[in-house]
Amino acid sequence: MLANIVLFTALGGVLSALIAALSLLLPQATRDRALPHSVSFATGTLLATALLALIPHAVAGAGPFRVHDVGIALLAGIGIFFVLEKFLLWRHCHTEAVETAHTHEHHRHEASGWLVMVGDGLHNFIDGVLIAAAFLTDFHLGVVTTLAIMAHEIPQEVGNFAVLLHGGFSRGKALLWNVLSSLTAVAGGVVGWWTLGTAMSLLPYALAVAAASLLYVAVADLIPGLHKRTDLRAGAFQLLWIGVGIGLVAFAESQLH
Image (cartoon, rainbow, N blue to C red; front, side, top):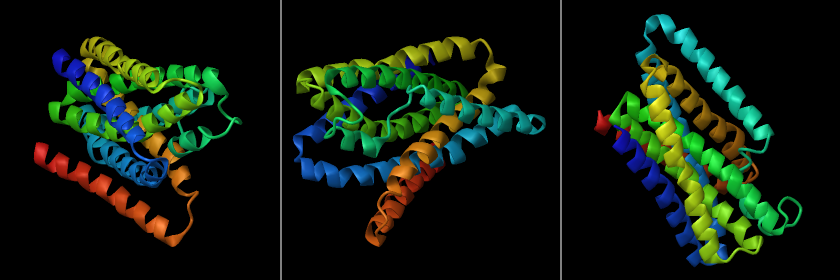
């Protein structure tokens, strides 16, 4: 099981960074057009993974007499991620990250790039713990959770690249540091395996916290960015890509079990 956790956290982190790096080969106008669709898709995958996969497994694992405790863990998780964001550990608003690459108001040169890397490393570490919790519950749940986190990470990494390049990093240096930051997910996966593996009774509540993290990112981070575009055509495409993300997770759940 540890091998699976290390493999998928490493692959998820590295592939997210590499796929995001490929976007830098595209013209800026193309990247700007594609990013809102990828954010909408990520919103759908995060919501579906939390509500169709993680929470049902948490409830099933806790049993009928502990459902209330799962709800408490879910609420506590949302509170934890709210506090973390307040302390700038989760300041990765995907759409705004790209926009701030062209301004000096929010990110100031190289210092801002290092700040983003520190926050991203902590974020990826937490993702690794969540992936470990999913794998310890069920292999297929771990795969679905990894894919959902990747869908969320790719547009974020695109924003990170924009901030790093704006801060004076070369493309090679930006790629190197983004990959190294992504690999902190492996450390999180190992820590999650070690701590949760010795306390299996805590797994349902760890899954509830994992669901809270995905729900929080989708509702507090991604959806507000989508609402900045109010025209009917943009809204229709957002709904379409959110639906595609939900449908993909639902299909994967039905096929993997």
